[in-house]
Image 1 (cartoon, rainbow, N blue to C red):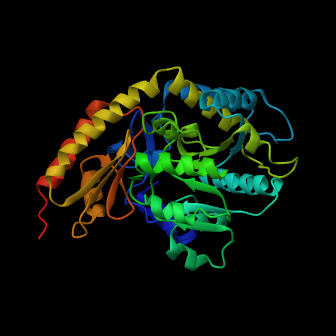
Image 2 (cartoon, one colour):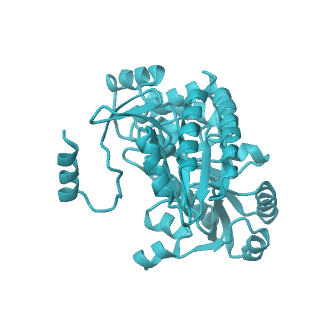
Image 3 (cartoon, rainbow, N blue to C red):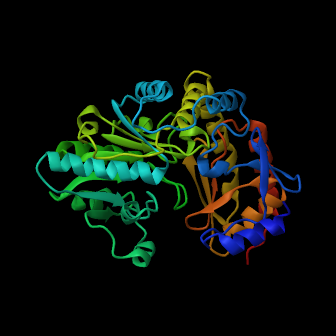
Length: 398
């Protein structure tokens, strides 16, 4: 279909919520996507950190196609072998004992919120949940409330009660907010949507220790950072901590809608029969896709190789600190952000890179976010670095 007809249909029928780039993607192969004109782009967006095996990965594609011929979906009223196989593999890989499968990151975080509240009830009280300012945990009403974006809060008030916020990376403020009304804390080790902002090692270790000393649940939102994105299967592993719960989505099934809430035995058995549910969560197709992703990561060697490529990525990006209009370069593994001064819109950099055959996106405060497939190569990283260097070298900021 002609891109103008695609845009016409969008303008006529789709609710006006997406600011789309002026291209229509048609297919993908390896770490590249192709638009309706046949132009090739190396993809450093990957469906926002979702397509971690790139496109048309042989083992993944075969596993999904095989499952399509068996069962795509059945109700969770029934057992399926593939779901049983997958949850066993996921729990063994993560060290958690209990899991609930969902369709998205917001649903995974909703599950964590409900599970935490059920846990509080079972232990005799109502408690609040704290999250960091400028965090992003989803777009449902509860996860939107947990997300520290007051502008969004005002647009959708009245919002659910029982949530609070602490200042990003400020342990003194965090400690002051952790009163007897708080039962759980949820945070991302790297805040993705607000511009790839990592919490410091000291903050995370001290916040975790303080929560454990007070019997407060510690929940890590691994929706963007999980599944090998930071060089380890889960980002919390970098800090020597063990949360009570983690949430997953995005890369968990390689681009097929899927999510998970993982919990310890004590917390994960807080739900009673019928307390929670999902029609599509953990269906056979999603489980087959997720099982293939986890197998490729943990048994196919991708986790180790992508960790090395992520280190290389960081080394190559450090080169851009020489430009005075770049204020920060941050991130870990294959999750990186480059922040520009306000006079130079990151969206302009995004457009110039797209013209040169590289897809990136803008997140947070004027930051280019880079979250390619974990199968990205050093050569493709070199190509992006060369293109960005060309763009930066030709940029004049008055």
